[in-house]
Structure formats: C-alpha cells, structure tokens
Amino acid sequence: MKKKRVITYGTFDMFHIGHLNLLNRLSELGDELIVAVSTDAFNAAKGKKTLIPYEQRVEIVRNIKCVNAVIAEENWEQKIEDILKHDINIFAMGSDWEGKFDFLKSHCEVLYLPRTEDVSTTELKIALNDFLKEHGAGFGV
Ligand code: C2G
Image 1 (cartoon, rainbow, N blue to C red):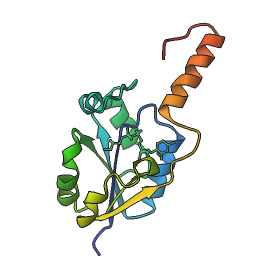
Image 2 (cartoon, rainbow, N blue to C red):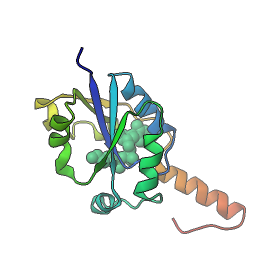
Image 3 (cartoon, rainbow, N blue to C red):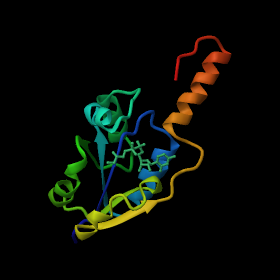
C-alpha cells in the first residue's frame, strides 16, 4: 500500500506549541511527515531574523516524534521539485499562508490549517524581553 506523504515548510525559530500543534495535526493526515526547515540564508532572503541557528532548528524538528524526515528549505522555488522528488500527497501550511501556495494544487492536495492563537516567535521574544526587563537584563527587540 503506497504511503501517504505530507510536507510542510517553515522557520521553526524558538520552537513553540503553535509549531507542535501544526506538526501533530499534519502527521494525522498521512503516514509520513516531511518538514522543510528554512536555512539561515533563506530566512535572510525572507527578511526574517532568527534567534536559533539552522543546525539547531533542524535538530529540534528532527526530534519531534511525529516528524519522519527533515530537508532544507533554501528558496521559494523548490516546492514543486520537493513534491515530485518525495512523492508528496499533501502540502499543508498554517492559515497565515491561506491561498499563497494554491499553485501547487496541480501536483498535490493543498491544505491550510488554523494557526494556534496567541503564540508566535515574535510574541515569545516580546514576553521574554519584558520578563528580562522586569528581572534585570533586557535586550532590544
Ligand atoms: N504556525 C501556526 N501557529 C502559530 C505559529 C506558526 O500554525 N501560532 C505555523 C505557520 O502557519 C507555519 C508553521 O507554523 O505553517 C511554521 O511557522 P514559521 O516558522 O513562522 O514559518 P514561516 O516563517 O511562516 O515560513 O515557504 C514557507 C515558509 O518557509 C514559511
């Protein structure tokens, strides 16, 4: 029986419950979950500053129970090639990307799952900064 494969892409900086909820829900959609983690160079291209280096972000995602494989996300253009190379059945992202990847529908199912409310890497950084200001050190966010 052919395995149903799911793929998703992301930075996964300061891994949090929003990331975990998404990956767990995605893993329920098929037999294997592949996660493409954005490299530091690609994040720079996305204009996204990350706190945790790529090697550590990959190591954390690779060790999430529901994740079967991790690949590098190096550019915006690799998704179709990835879907073909890994024989992907479902491409899925959180709902903040709603509609942005519908061009992949000719290659696989495309789903957008509701984001987890009230958590994001940015919110975590602000909360941490407030905490540090209150308890001594602090850093410019
Ligand atoms: N996410 C979520 N709930 C949150 C925060 C994030 O469901 N509270 C989801 C996002 O919708 C995304 C995934 O977790 O699908 C990873 O989020 P980021 O690490 O912020 O990824 P992003 O920078 O959006 O990169 O080519 C696609 C890009 O690489 C996506």
